[in-house]
Image 1 (tube, helix red, strand yellow):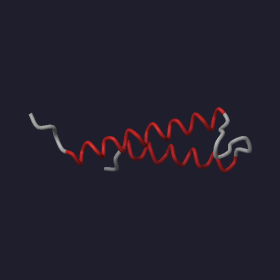
Image 2: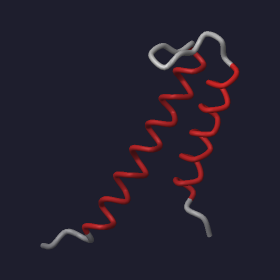
Image 3: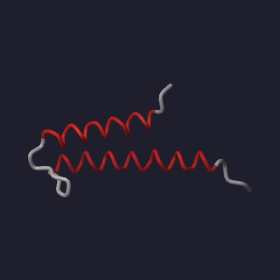
Length: 63
């Protein structure tokens, strides 16, 4: 079964990329409100996914 967090992270990235391709107001350094919301969603999910990956590599904490 695919990882739900990974799927959501990838879907958010695809939504952000699609918006950036079609929005005339968004640039590399400035985003429209919708573009900003999509970018923040993508980065939040990416951070959560990568943090979980790091934690899994470290293993459970030792008592």
